Image (cartoon, each protein chain N blue to C red):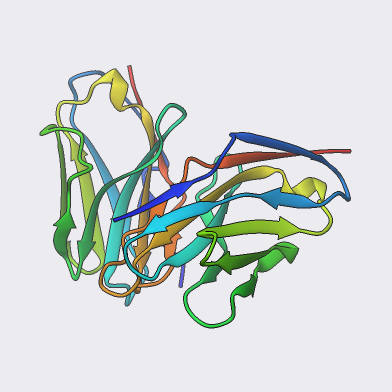
Length: 111
Length: 114
Protein backbone atom coordinates (compact mmCIF):
# COMPACT_ATOMS: atom_id res chain seq x y z
CA UNK A 1 0.00 0.00 0.00
CA UNK A 2 1.28 3.50 -0.78
CA UNK A 3 0.18 4.82 2.59
CA UNK A 4 -1.99 7.87 3.18
CA UNK A 5 -1.77 10.16 0.18
CA UNK A 6 -2.33 13.87 0.47
CA UNK A 7 -2.45 16.50 -2.24
CA UNK A 8 -1.18 19.01 -2.89
CA UNK A 9 2.06 18.91 -0.86
CA UNK A 10 2.34 22.68 -0.97
CA UNK A 11 -0.30 25.34 -1.56
CA UNK A 12 0.16 29.08 -1.70
CA UNK A 13 -2.98 31.13 -2.07
CA UNK A 14 -4.21 34.64 -1.59
CA UNK A 15 -6.40 35.67 1.28
CA UNK A 16 -10.06 35.20 0.44
CA UNK A 17 -9.54 32.34 -1.96
CA UNK A 18 -11.02 28.89 -1.53
CA UNK A 19 -8.59 26.10 -0.70
CA UNK A 20 -9.29 22.38 -0.98
CA UNK A 21 -7.00 19.78 0.54
CA UNK A 22 -7.37 16.15 -0.48
CA UNK A 23 -6.69 12.84 1.22
CA UNK A 24 -6.74 9.20 0.18
CA UNK A 25 -6.61 6.93 3.25
CA UNK A 26 -5.09 3.48 3.40
CA UNK A 27 -7.42 0.90 1.91
CA UNK A 28 -9.42 -0.92 4.58
CA UNK A 29 -8.96 1.72 7.27
CA UNK A 30 -12.26 2.79 8.77
CA UNK A 31 -11.25 5.99 10.56
CA UNK A 32 -9.90 9.19 9.02
CA UNK A 33 -8.54 12.24 10.81
CA UNK A 34 -7.62 15.78 9.80
CA UNK A 35 -5.00 17.51 11.93
CA UNK A 36 -3.47 20.97 11.75
CA UNK A 37 0.09 21.65 12.95
CA UNK A 38 1.49 25.07 13.80
CA UNK A 39 4.42 26.22 15.89
CA UNK A 40 2.13 28.01 18.32
CA UNK A 41 -0.57 25.40 18.83
CA UNK A 42 1.14 22.13 17.96
CA UNK A 43 -0.99 19.30 16.55
CA UNK A 44 -4.71 19.99 16.68
CA UNK A 45 -7.40 17.50 15.70
CA UNK A 46 -9.86 19.26 13.43
CA UNK A 47 -12.32 16.47 12.63
CA UNK A 48 -12.50 12.73 12.41
CA UNK A 49 -14.67 10.29 10.52
CA UNK A 50 -15.57 6.70 11.29
CA UNK A 51 -16.97 4.63 8.42
CA UNK A 52 -17.31 7.87 6.38
CA UNK A 53 -19.47 9.53 9.04
CA UNK A 54 -18.20 12.64 10.88
CA UNK A 55 -17.91 11.71 14.56
CA UNK A 56 -16.32 14.76 16.15
CA UNK A 57 -15.86 18.12 14.44
CA UNK A 58 -15.41 20.12 17.62
CA UNK A 59 -11.88 21.04 16.54
CA UNK A 60 -12.95 22.78 13.35
CA UNK A 61 -12.00 26.39 14.03
CA UNK A 62 -14.98 28.12 12.44
CA UNK A 63 -17.55 27.93 9.71
CA UNK A 64 -14.96 28.72 7.08
CA UNK A 65 -13.72 25.15 7.48
CA UNK A 66 -15.62 22.15 6.18
CA UNK A 67 -14.73 18.49 5.61
CA UNK A 68 -16.37 15.73 3.64
CA UNK A 69 -15.83 12.03 3.15
CA UNK A 70 -18.04 10.95 0.25
CA UNK A 71 -16.63 7.42 0.23
CA UNK A 72 -14.13 5.21 2.02
CA UNK A 73 -11.24 6.20 -0.23
CA UNK A 74 -11.44 9.98 -0.34
CA UNK A 75 -11.80 13.00 1.92
CA UNK A 76 -11.51 16.75 1.46
CA UNK A 77 -10.89 19.64 3.81
CA UNK A 78 -12.06 22.97 2.44
CA UNK A 79 -11.35 26.48 3.67
CA UNK A 80 -13.50 29.25 2.25
CA UNK A 81 -12.54 32.04 2.45
CA UNK A 82 -8.93 31.47 3.49
CA UNK A 83 -7.10 33.83 5.86
CA UNK A 84 -3.39 34.28 6.66
CA UNK A 85 -3.91 32.72 10.10
CA UNK A 86 -4.90 29.48 8.37
CA UNK A 87 -1.29 29.03 7.27
CA UNK A 88 -0.14 25.70 8.70
CA UNK A 89 0.67 22.12 7.80
CA UNK A 90 -2.47 20.02 7.47
CA UNK A 91 -2.18 16.28 8.01
CA UNK A 92 -4.56 13.52 7.13
CA UNK A 93 -4.32 10.20 8.96
CA UNK A 94 -6.20 6.91 8.81
CA UNK A 95 -6.50 3.99 11.21
CA UNK A 96 -8.16 0.69 11.98
CA UNK A 97 -8.92 1.48 15.62
CA UNK A 98 -5.34 1.34 16.95
CA UNK A 99 -2.51 3.44 15.61
CA UNK A 100 -2.98 6.13 13.01
CA UNK A 101 -0.92 6.35 9.85
CA UNK A 102 -0.12 9.84 8.65
CA UNK A 103 0.25 11.36 5.23
CA UNK A 104 3.13 13.66 4.33
CA UNK A 105 0.98 16.72 4.92
CA UNK A 106 -0.02 19.79 2.93
CA UNK A 107 1.84 22.99 3.74
CA UNK A 108 -0.63 25.82 3.26
CA UNK A 109 0.50 29.41 3.01
CA UNK A 110 -2.14 32.13 2.77
CA UNK A 111 -0.73 35.52 1.77
CA UNK B 1 -11.64 12.19 27.84
CA UNK B 2 -7.90 11.85 27.33
CA UNK B 3 -4.95 14.20 27.60
CA UNK B 4 -1.16 14.00 27.36
CA UNK B 5 1.50 16.04 29.09
CA UNK B 6 5.01 16.25 27.73
CA UNK B 7 7.04 18.50 30.01
CA UNK B 8 9.56 20.76 28.36
CA UNK B 9 9.89 21.44 24.67
CA UNK B 10 13.51 20.57 24.02
CA UNK B 11 15.97 17.90 25.15
CA UNK B 12 19.64 17.83 24.18
CA UNK B 13 21.89 14.80 24.64
CA UNK B 14 25.34 13.77 23.49
CA UNK B 15 25.76 11.06 20.92
CA UNK B 16 25.92 7.73 22.74
CA UNK B 17 24.10 9.02 25.82
CA UNK B 18 20.80 7.78 27.20
CA UNK B 19 17.67 9.31 25.74
CA UNK B 20 14.71 9.78 28.09
CA UNK B 21 11.60 11.59 26.91
CA UNK B 22 8.80 11.85 29.43
CA UNK B 23 5.09 11.42 28.87
CA UNK B 24 2.22 11.43 31.33
CA UNK B 25 -1.34 10.79 30.34
CA UNK B 26 -4.86 11.11 31.64
CA UNK B 27 -7.61 8.80 30.48
CA UNK B 28 -11.08 7.88 31.69
CA UNK B 29 -10.81 4.45 30.04
CA UNK B 30 -7.93 1.97 29.70
CA UNK B 31 -5.57 3.82 27.39
CA UNK B 32 -3.83 2.94 24.21
CA UNK B 33 -0.51 4.80 24.18
CA UNK B 34 1.76 5.74 21.31
CA UNK B 35 5.02 7.46 20.50
CA UNK B 36 5.46 9.08 17.10
CA UNK B 37 8.52 10.69 15.55
CA UNK B 38 8.50 13.54 13.06
CA UNK B 39 11.52 14.42 10.95
CA UNK B 40 11.68 17.85 9.27
CA UNK B 41 9.11 18.32 6.52
CA UNK B 42 7.73 14.83 7.07
CA UNK B 43 4.57 13.31 8.47
CA UNK B 44 4.43 11.50 11.79
CA UNK B 45 5.81 7.97 11.92
CA UNK B 46 4.86 5.44 14.59
CA UNK B 47 7.76 4.46 16.86
CA UNK B 48 5.89 2.10 19.17
CA UNK B 49 2.56 1.45 20.83
CA UNK B 50 1.02 -0.05 23.93
CA UNK B 51 -2.48 -1.50 23.77
CA UNK B 52 -2.69 -4.44 26.15
CA UNK B 53 -0.36 -7.09 27.54
CA UNK B 54 3.34 -6.58 28.19
CA UNK B 55 3.97 -3.17 29.66
CA UNK B 56 7.46 -2.81 28.20
CA UNK B 57 7.16 -2.30 24.49
CA UNK B 58 9.92 -2.12 21.94
CA UNK B 59 9.79 -0.08 18.79
CA UNK B 60 11.83 0.83 15.79
CA UNK B 61 15.33 2.35 15.87
CA UNK B 62 16.13 0.90 19.31
CA UNK B 63 13.48 2.84 21.23
CA UNK B 64 11.35 1.36 23.97
CA UNK B 65 8.73 2.59 26.41
CA UNK B 66 7.17 1.27 29.58
CA UNK B 67 3.53 1.68 30.54
CA UNK B 68 3.22 2.39 34.27
CA UNK B 69 -0.41 2.60 35.24
CA UNK B 70 0.32 3.65 38.83
CA UNK B 71 2.31 6.62 37.57
CA UNK B 72 0.12 7.27 34.50
CA UNK B 73 3.34 7.42 32.53
CA UNK B 74 4.69 6.13 29.23
CA UNK B 75 8.26 7.41 29.04
CA UNK B 76 10.35 6.79 25.92
CA UNK B 77 13.96 5.63 26.23
CA UNK B 78 16.89 4.65 24.09
CA UNK B 79 20.18 3.46 25.64
CA UNK B 80 22.48 5.21 23.17
CA UNK B 81 21.55 8.25 21.10
CA UNK B 82 22.53 8.50 17.46
CA UNK B 83 22.76 11.66 15.40
CA UNK B 84 19.89 10.40 13.24
CA UNK B 85 17.57 10.42 16.29
CA UNK B 86 17.37 14.21 16.15
CA UNK B 87 13.69 14.91 15.50
CA UNK B 88 10.45 15.88 17.20
CA UNK B 89 8.75 13.23 19.33
CA UNK B 90 5.07 13.10 20.16
CA UNK B 91 3.29 11.03 22.78
CA UNK B 92 -0.36 10.24 22.11
CA UNK B 93 -3.28 8.52 23.84
CA UNK B 94 -6.56 7.05 22.67
CA UNK B 95 -9.35 5.02 24.14
CA UNK B 96 -8.92 2.32 21.52
CA UNK B 97 -11.65 0.51 19.59
CA UNK B 98 -14.45 2.64 18.21
CA UNK B 99 -13.18 5.62 20.22
CA UNK B 100 -9.92 5.74 18.36
CA UNK B 101 -9.39 9.49 18.37
CA UNK B 102 -5.71 10.20 19.06
CA UNK B 103 -4.90 13.02 21.43
CA UNK B 104 -1.32 14.28 21.13
CA UNK B 105 1.02 16.00 23.51
CA UNK B 106 2.78 19.18 22.40
CA UNK B 107 5.89 17.30 21.35
CA UNK B 108 9.54 17.39 22.38
CA UNK B 109 12.43 18.29 20.10
CA UNK B 110 15.44 16.03 20.60
CA UNK B 111 18.85 17.38 19.65
CA UNK B 112 21.92 15.11 19.56
CA UNK B 113 25.36 16.68 20.04
CA UNK B 114 28.38 15.08 18.38
